[in-house]
Image (cartoon, rainbow, N blue to C red; front, side, top):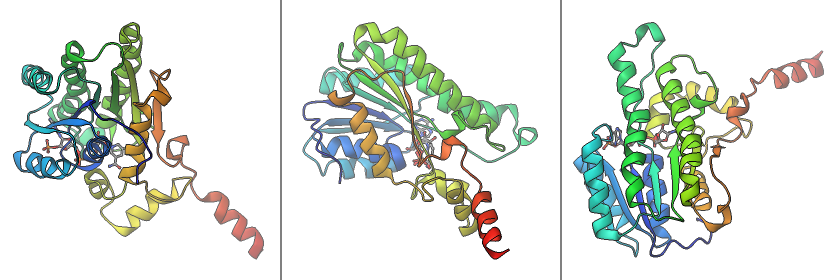
Length: 269
Ligand code: NAP
């Protein structure tokens, strides 16, 4: 259960909000009374997500759109503003991924991920600016551990998410004087998400991932959305430009279990 935050009469926009972590964040704000707008490409996913979000007291709108389409994104923000007024919170989390070494990624494949994750975030934030509440708005970019930890087979995502986090820092500086805060959340391996289903298809792969997490488990969508509620709340009113891992410590480097292996060997010896 989320902590005791109140987002009544606040307007929240979530790009890529139709599933997984982003939908969890949209749902957490809706649960706390916010009016919520979400956008993504797939009409069926948007409909299902809107049905879920409507269980709460605030108003909900779903938009079908692609973050790569700058003018489409701009139109959506105008409609959100017409319906709900100034926008208090923007979450940018649309992303794509596939697993391949650099020699196996075509220029188009690399571009596709950079276009969704990085250019898409740029499009969303740039289009949002004129409709944001000033002062007071809060932006959260959903990044990934790839931004901090070089990850083989994920060069495209590493490059894109590192760009997202630098955008966070630059915009914290450019928009800070207007009273807009800009932060990134870096989810670690989060269970029951499309991302983890894709990257850890077998039990062995799941065990290998949790072995690298200091807390030795997957995170939950609620654990990420709780931090989003906290970062956008008055409790964090002096926090901007922060790239915050919510990852059980995995971005520290994720200890391989050598220590455990050698200490059990020394007991045996
Ligand atoms: P997910 O459920 O697949 O969420 C991605 C969302 O982005 C979907 O709603 C998708 O909906 C939307 N989307 C994709 N391309 C889009 C586009 N071009 N325009 C608009 N919307 C688009 O995946 P997830 O695993 O929860 O990941 C959510 C975020 O967390 C991502 O930014 C990811 O990098 C980050 N993350 C996840 C994990 C994890 O453990 N899962 C770990 C670290 C970081 P449509 O298909 O309808 O467009």
